[in-house]
Image (cartoon, rainbow, N blue to C red):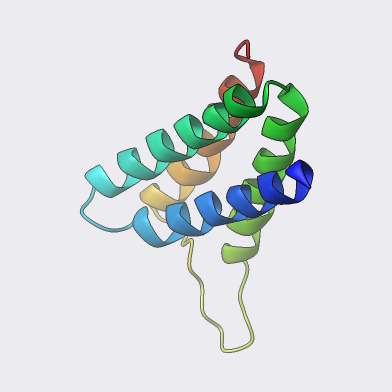
Length: 103
């Protein structure tokens, strides 16, 4: 059950990051990166295992990657601009740091 909750929270953090990263530049991007990293770190801290952080990070990654691909109506939520590139690159670095931090 904790794995499913971790996956759901990771998807929720990813969706919030996607919707927030282009708002109020650069504060939205910073808030989405800090919020995602802190949230994923707190998942592992709360349940005491690194595997839950990895599952939540997988949910975040899959959500953000799906938002960066054209949809049925040609909508694109993570664009190829500076904010979108920073969200993808710095987000992955943030998740790796959150996973690697000691529980």
